[in-house]
Length: 421
Image (cartoon, rainbow, N blue to C red; front, side, top):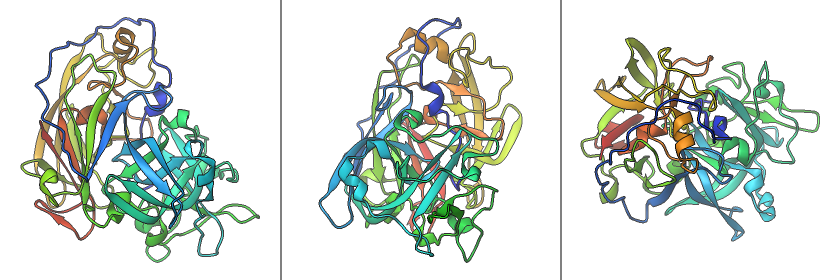
């Protein structure tokens, strides 16, 4: 996987169950009234829904404006998935207006067109690297390197991208569940030193990241830090040291949609103060902290990933779903807990209580609902860890502090922080 990218299961919910499969539902007690969402020019409205194709659940998204660099040729694109588990702005080609295919191509050191492969545990995204001016709320980045996923002009993806054995593609709006991905992990670049020609190698994990693709074929290449896909928010002139996601609490039966907010910056103005949030420093190499669950310690293998539509962890006591494969479907909702512990500069600990209900039963009871705070599933067989996905974010503010020299009231990043409403 590319640095900072995480397994996700948003593609597993392409078709939700419409018929009962047994199993109990969860209670529907009302949560406390949520506080008002933050407002201000540095706030982007965030929506959790079923995505542009109405095929998924727990897909948090914002709207981003792209322009051909230095021009007024622009397009505003909604349903860009907010992903704290990857880095970089990626747009699905089918979501672009024809005029936007004039976005200039990024080039390798050998002046060949540059392409990239983004690897997840359940698939790959392949496409060209282009340059675009990008705007989110009041933040603007000029000539930002972005990935154009599924670019129809792309050569065939190399074998070390598609996987050996092969994994499914994530190259369309339907496959991804969104018109693009806004990767705002703790990292400043998507591959970092591992792809830099001075400090690393292009292929540290046996999989390709960046490629030069002359007419003779695509070859794996090293790419300087400056030429890699950047964390878009880190490229803004202000409010560029991190972000916070605000999502109100919801009932255990779910909701059709949920409105939230993505706030730019940490401790840079009155609406993004860190306050007394629990701060978990993370490994500067993996972006992970430690999670203890069910008597097992996942050392440096806990992470917060808004791009995962459930919490993912291994628990053999939980029954698997029949219809929504890849998720848990206990006979009745269960309450569990896990303890998070920071690494490095912060060893703060925090015990989190969470619920797991049957996704088959939930989706059968309310087929039009797309936001749930209590769905979960097992980790992919190739990954060991504890993935705090979008259910964790409901009823909280979750802050992502970027690596780098900028500081916050809790010190420099990288870290995650969270506070209950």
